[in-house]
Figure 1 (cartoon, one colour):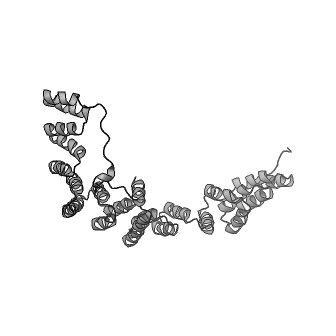
Figure 2 (spheres, helix red, strand yellow; figure 1 turned 90 degrees about the horizontal axis):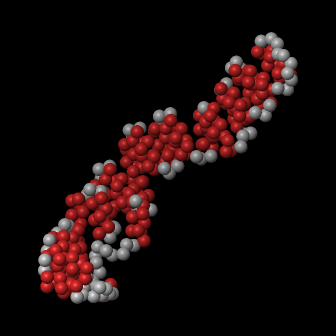
Length: 323
């Protein structure tokens, strides 16, 4: 390479005359001569460097023209690297990419504008949070309502109720859970610490089971209400000894539990219980039971268990969404 002479503008001219436009462009860029640097880089086919210099020189017209020559997948990263946020915003708006528009507004701490963009992108959770950061509580509450509606439509009533409880709207949360099967609604209310509401629901269902003379339903609701003694008695009335047995054992009624295990021909359980009772006669009877327990009667012959009904497909979807 011939030795360059003179000051940097003269050296740049020499490089350009030699066809080394990129080197000339770098020389102009180092000396903040961005217009010439843009021209030289573009002439040398280095569009990214030309765009960088156009951005540095605040030449928006040249920047837009150069952007047209870039592959679409390189536009956003190139503008991001160059710090050309105004042009990056234009790019995202032209592509209707409002989620990225919102993120740019967030970086600029313009949370009200970020919320609008998130809402336009149908990112409701982010929109609500941005409205809250902008202290626009009326808009935040409006978007929360849209979130709740969307979650319910997707089958996630637990998620919708969780949002409402977090906002202090317990009554609305109970209304959202009410269409679910009562046992599912009861468990969801307990998970959301709506203990009084859950207890009221259980008592209503218990009264209905009494009215409809469904001892199995009554037993289950007594169990959910934390009344094991009454639940054990109700299970026996319903002919569900296998349900009553663990409750009697839990209550310390080992004699009754052992008797039920023997009647159900649950050999191992009967042996265990009679051993704990030091009941030699009972132990001998238990050891004489068949090792293989009898086949239980068909489920259809039993009264349906109100709290263990098969969930509908929608209910299953709610469980999956809530997890």
